[in-house]
Length: 423
Image 1 (cartoon, rainbow, N blue to C red):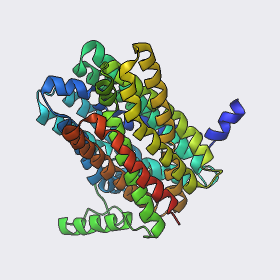
Image 2: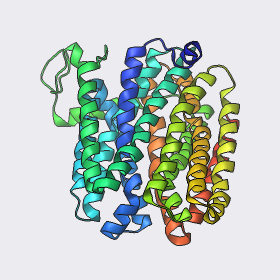
Image 3: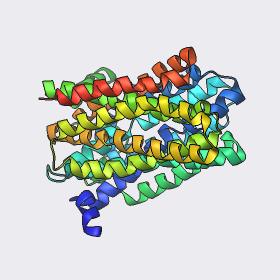
């Protein structure tokens, strides 16, 4: 059994990959802190589902805009330093959200969280791509994805569970404390050999062998030149398709993450706890799927694998319309069992496409432009993450969650076509 597991997790640099993956978990944990408590926010603050979806849109809009600047800052001031600052900023944003007296404060908290969270993916994913070879990059991305999925899975447990006992404000405070503790461990333990902190850099911009920094206009020209270098990646058909794939994955995933708890609770007429059971089952399955699919992506055709799991996702998500309607006629025990199993299967199939996509991107990456490549790709991810909750939140407000949620299957069909169209 151990030998079988090692086939999916054995990488060339386990300590660094493990630490980066743990930080990924914290980043993802913070990114969906609100979905498990959306029904409580709607009831307590008097907001609509469209407004709730826009909270996620604000987060990922900021996440998108600041991806490339975060990559430039990481190159200039050190990757570990920027990552730690970003993780700490997300903890502060959760505390701000916990103190919110109205919708405007929640919007501000989500904006701060998005800016802070933008620091992670361009640096973390490029580090893994640089560390691992073609023989292990699929597994490394699987471990990376597993860390993120564990962080996501902690959200309905830590936040939804505490919210059910002590309210949503207490839940956000506990979440911020948990994230801060992991941030401290990361800051103390992680050592990046290429970190600017280890090469004599300081926070003050210096150029030309340590001479004083140039004037403002020259600094701006230097900054824009650095940005151009950062995004100077070869534009090929394959990368354009991968950009579309990344966008669709994020639209699909974030919409499902945002509304699963509410969909189950409203559709079945159950409690918030039942909705979070389905959400948690989906995320646990996703974490296992990430490891399995990451190892599988090193052994089979990645395009066909991505297309197959996308078609499977479309069938399963579309099928929730029939399943949820049928559950209204059975007992509570049967409802709990069906919800757990059905969303577990959805999570296992849906999240399999993530390490496959990441391995495909990594196979296009060369060390001299990997940071820029992942910055561009993760911008597509952030734009998709901002788009998904807004679109399907508006559909839910207009037509109801029972129609909007199964409609996410249409995105999965587009995703399947994109995978299969890769050159």
